[in-house]
Length: 194
Image (tube, rainbow, N blue to C red; front, top):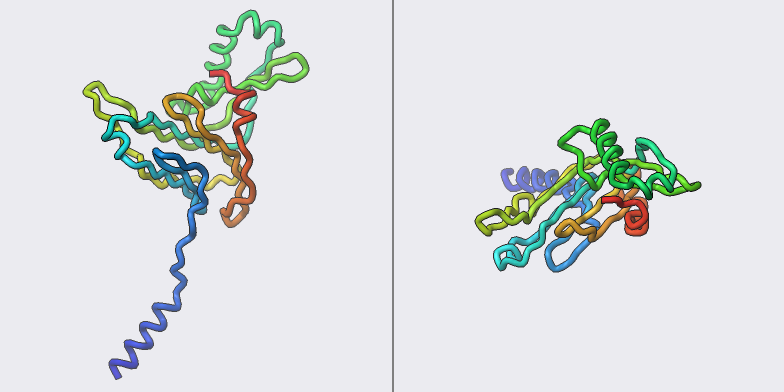
């Protein structure tokens, strides 16, 4: 009797679907990789490179794919007074975003009809690691993380030592499966102002 009840219990337990969803790879190099698993962004960087003293300062920023315009100027005026205009619109963007969510990589420029339009993408996630400390060690907290991002239209960007390395615009369906992926590099080169 015990054998039959154990067999039935085993059948019931094995009938539950426990399949794990597979990560969809976004970016991979010798330092680590980024992937997406449903509504999580998975960051997987090894610490061995940092122990060898050759690690990179990694900054991953995820933006909501929606432009928020803060103003515009004539292109001629922008060319003449670039620094003061950039400072003005950086301050405007900072006012509209929480202070802890603001990075100078948020503000961007779009040129059309001889005008410069300034906009920012709302920042959803920022993860930094690999910063070299005063005593020579690297701060690598966050090198293996799963960060939840439930938004459907996002832009994932990656910077090494402050330099743009990777970017992709991702659109998800209602089940959080990736519907489309578009390279963000061309738009980044046209719109980045930092």
